[in-house]
Length: 391
Image 1 (tube, rainbow, N blue to C red):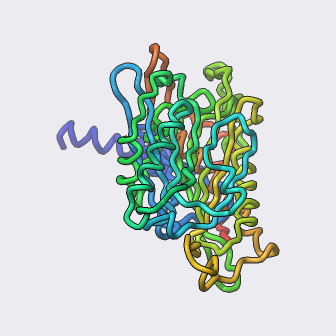
Image 2: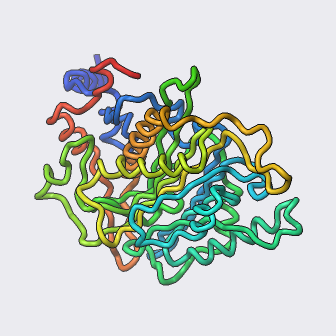
Image 3: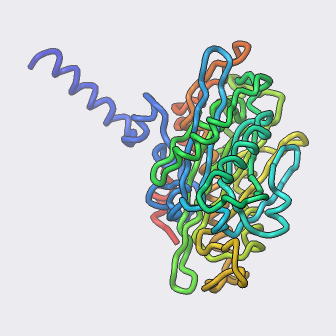
């Protein structure tokens, strides 16, 4: 036997002897999602992709601006469906946990309970640009030739640590491209789109997503999908494990506080009132990842349902209105959004790579080998495989 083959066999034996699952071994060489690392959040079953696009018809698109030494920003667009949203609105709601942020278009959604444009996420100082671009996009759609009012929905977090935010580099073309790029299926995560320049818990973060399937309601299951723009938190908890405390000598905890945008989609037939209740529960999932939510954190959740649309014209608001899920049946959806939000935040962290940006500032990727090591110390890896229980 040659030395080459002997070496390969020895390496394989050593890896096998370490008892690492395949995902554990792979994670040491690259980025991985929470489920791939064995970080199982909650007890509910994820959707097929474990992404917001598990909700049928939902599309996500990114434009990433990673240019020169100082541009680290972007746009993420979420489309509840692929048609003309002004003509066929979706029921929606917004809940603001802490209002140190710029959530354009929120008041009309709160008043009328519907969403009539794509949802666009970007950085704090480009909200105005995104609003103007989103209005122009809607005015240009076929069927909107006589449109004289539209409620553009734009959220943000501040990426000014890594990005030259004062340069306001996002353009209308970026917003148009993010909408045009929107697709069903797999969603890019980490340092992409509106998450290109964001950080959380002293590490590089970005865009993350996850989903859960509900327990049967009236004999039918529903999907809850979440996408987050994560840019918040000083102290990280992973499934209750105090990660930041465990690596206190190595951890770099910045003094600023940041924000989060949480986008929630579901195919469950919910009223706008129960969509707001669903949005509220997302912050329980967010709260499980951090020590506290600060004075200067802007935290907003936007929830919508794809179960029906609301026509812009007509005598009746909705034809063929589905029977709404009752208050008494909401618990499984509350649990779903809590779990999906928590896991989406972990995915935003785990999938992000180290980025150096404006003024030479660097945000390091969270070390996944440390995540595995510390979670093993607390016996918190592969919980669902060991418990062998799903609802």
